[in-house]
Image (cartoon, rainbow, N blue to C red; front, side, top):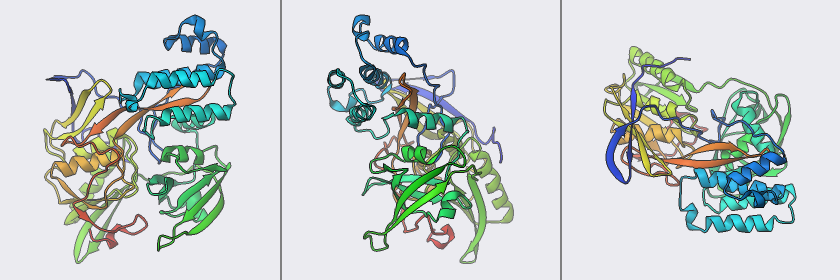
Length: 440
């Protein structure tokens, strides 16, 4: 694993959409959380203490008079607190064009006689679903606890990377790590998850599905999956019991192949982390020493990871003064990342990126940055289209709420959210196929 403190220097600038003047910020951008289907590095805030006094205090701080707050039952307090958290942080200040405050009032009224935990979960999920943003959602206590546990590193898993199948709205396995419980159970890229431990997966965000798959080491998780038939008809149903365990994932895998008599360096990036840029830099330097003719970066099934990792890796291949990404906050302010000096591979070997519908988030930041700065061409299929950033906030009832706090745009100011990045050359190359066998 290589560190890369000087792979390239990235500077951040800021502007306002309503003010053309630019100002240099005094500190680097701190991105809260990128939620993806693979196990990401999460910045999750500590759970709040529970108890009646705390609930009253939180509700009162949400703009409700103390007298009214003291009459709220536990369910009403949870609704008010969740609403206030989203109201304070959510990037879209129109809240989907609806009467956002009226929705709060109606939900509090509906909870006046109390609710079961199931009904409260349903009410909060429905309230946030009205925003039309699948990434802003309520996390019940058990699910939030899993995310907290995951962010501390005290968690085991099964070894899959997840995206979503848009046609059926089910979590889609886009990668299976070799030697992991998932691989040993026979799961493959392309399988759809139908149930996890008895919970239906339809409509489940990839990171929510990932949270259900993770847990304490040596515990078991039930997985019902479907392997679609080659003709698109109903496929094989898999009913599995898988034992979670800890394992090491290599995020960057380089290798050299010979295609049509020419040596090519292929770097597969499974997920972006703080070490990715250093690992990629080291791999490319080895490629150059061995005389490869060009480099292919395989991003199929890469659902993101840490945004700074994607930014730093893009900087390896860009000249100085090149825009990498723009981050737009809820107040309309724009924070841009620009290369301060040329990256070590800015004028290097020809570069091709292999992408698919599972390429998302930080991987899309990297792909758009090198493509729109004319450093690389994209082949494969249109990417997933996740151009938003989330944070996870704790709630007094032991649950939490994931909130979209910003969105990003590409160097040419394209908003790729729900759209994805088009490719320069469309080819069929499923994630289960060796990149060297594809027309790259």
